[in-house]
Image (cartoon, rainbow, N blue to C red; front, side, top):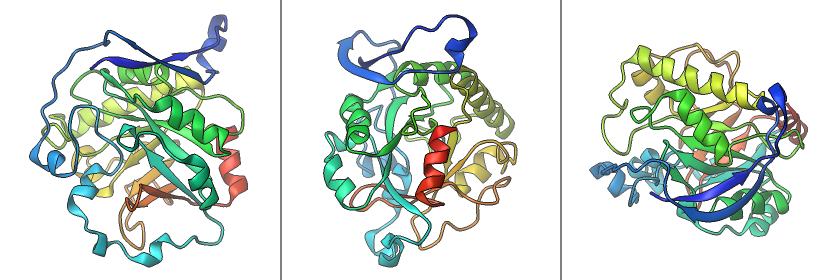
Length: 284
């Protein structure tokens, strides 16, 4: 894969560099950082993924859930919550003004995957949502069998996953879920997976000063981390479940912060709080 995105960060001397990252992005083409081949599984192909880099939150749900299984009532906004969406390169250029007019107020955009892919539409999606009035954030699709967690956090922050205290930028999110390229848990033991996640999160916080959100499903979390409760006290939960309720949450979390409840007609998300609480999360 070729790197298609370069994120320019302000140069800040000393330890302050680790705390604040600017978020100006421009697109360009250059040799890839890491050439890697990732054949897709049959399930990933059936879900519409076409090449490495196609992983996005809930891709497995899209392969296994049907439209009829997603109750229409779940799409109705609830009092004290905020509606949003998440996007990846799969959506291409997004009509942000149109979604804002539908009542969406926050968005997460895929910035990177593994240590080999950046979203070629990141600039239009990340900056476009900001310009349309959204509170936005970036997410990283993890491939723990490629490189260590800290290395992938570095790659994420270097390709759009930074944070700034502008009141419109959410903390980055780690998308850790079903593997579209092979073994569900990427060949890692439960203990090794927990260590990988911890390394990513610790490095992300060192670079940005923020605790990253974690996107996952309860089933994957139980299978691949042994239902670890290690992160519930520090990292916001972004739970995925295409149903009328978010269901049982992974261990350690008493509530969710974000809930991805549908992929129709685009990934639909809900923030578990009023708009001022969303603003507070962005401010840190």
